[in-house]
Amino acid sequence: MTTISIHFTIAYLLTGFLLIGLSFFVFLQDIKNQLNKNFAFYSFSIGFWCLISSLLTSTDSYAIALLSDKICFIGVILIPLTFFNFITTYLDRKDKRKYIKKTLIFFTILFLIIDIFNINFIAGLSPRKGLKYFTDPGFFYYVYVIYFSIICAYCIFLIFQSLISKNCKKNDKKQLLYFLIASVIGYGGGILNYSLTFKLIPTEIAIVGHYTIAIYTLIIAFLIFRHDFLKINLILKKTLVYSTLISSFTIVYFLFIYLIEMLFREVVGLRSVPMTLITFTTFAILFIPFKNKIQMFFDKHFFHGSIEQIDAENIRLREELHKSERLKAVATLAAGMAHEIKNPLTSIKTFTEFIDKKKDDPDFINKFKEIVGPEVDRINHIVKQLLEFSKPSELELKDTNINNLLNETLELLNNQFISRNIKIEKHLNDLPTIKTDPNQIKQVFLNLLLNAIEAINTNGTITVSTKAINSSTTYDIPHTTYEPVVNISISDTGCGINKADIPRLFDPFYTNKDSGTGLGLSVVHGIIDKHHGKIEVNSEINKGTEFRISL
Image (cartoon, rainbow, N blue to C red; front, side, top):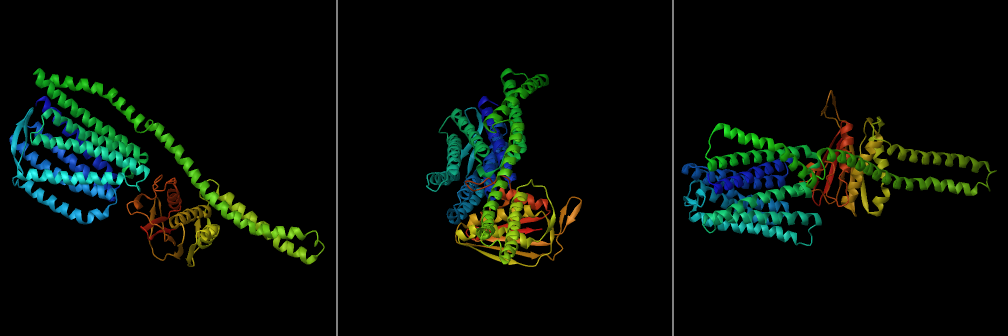
């Protein structure tokens, strides 16, 4: 292998491993998420092309080189379709997908047939400077390059169009800008590859193009790490991230050693086993300090601290957010209770104004005892509720009537329902008494109702319903089995939730709200889980959302 062919092979392998690793990483974050799947297929297509192309630039066999050239083009032919699918899903451009996607599928199948059966697609292989074999294009190769350029340029235009749109949010704009830069760099490198095929540029320039595709991959990785690209929550999966980074680095490092050793043998002319072992031993000794330097770089620039520091910081932040979420619920309770306390205080104040004049009136004194005493008890009960609610969240199980608990929570939010013109519909059936922690279950209802109010904003309906479960459905918990006996449903006619977001709705810190902590529904899920219950969500955009709880 010549120095140029080694560079081509390194660039192909580096980019191939990075992109295929990235595609699997994104796919495994949420295998049901269509956006993740589309990005994974898109990245895999490019990575597949690069990985197989490494055979073309490293083999001495014409037959293997020609076969690898045909196989690698399967990945290349899939790039326009997968790029378009990802971009239109990411930008939520369903209007574009309806009529273009079918056309792209047709051309993709057509070009795959032309490539597999080599219908004047690859005319053969011939040498370039430093390369023993490289593609000689046939007629349909030229046709494909025109098709490839039009579709990929159109996708980049869609990114730019969304970037300059007035409706583009600040965080989305940053993500789109980085992705646009990465795409321009990546496809710029791809153009140089085509230029070498057409013998328009020297191989030295084409090498730069292949390394720029690797740069594209690194920018995408930076987007995921620093700017929540594809909504991947890396803090919760930091161990996997570190493992992926170190594994990728190790593969690339030892691949680099192997290629350097090959170059060394070619230059020096030594082909002995001892010399090979000495080379590998030398680089293995250098590996640990070099790996530590790389790890420190990622700690500083990507994670802002070591893995231990991140873990400690994450625990501290989670505790603070749990407290803030609970204080938010307490504040809502306090606001509702303040309204409730006003009524008994009005009665007490009225009696105290007349006590001097009517202190000798037996009827007045009796009436005073009948009303003021219970009203004071009522205030005491309300304050006690607030104090109990703000206590630490250990379960204190009591016999609970869920219907009463729902009614109490609805009463606390009554002012908000009135001010926002939200109608409440209740369908509360007779229920058996069950063992729960009333304060924590009330927090669940409070969070779900507050979310419903926020989703509706004004002029809508919240429906609350309960029913007893007669089925024999069971939930397996370690060492025991629980049978749910009560179903609670809280639904609204609000803005709804995107289907892509539903699988991650209960993940800590996951939110689409500008001012949200992303912890409310996580707390709800935790409370229901501690009660050995189950919570499910069903939602449609612009139609509403329903949360179903089984206890």
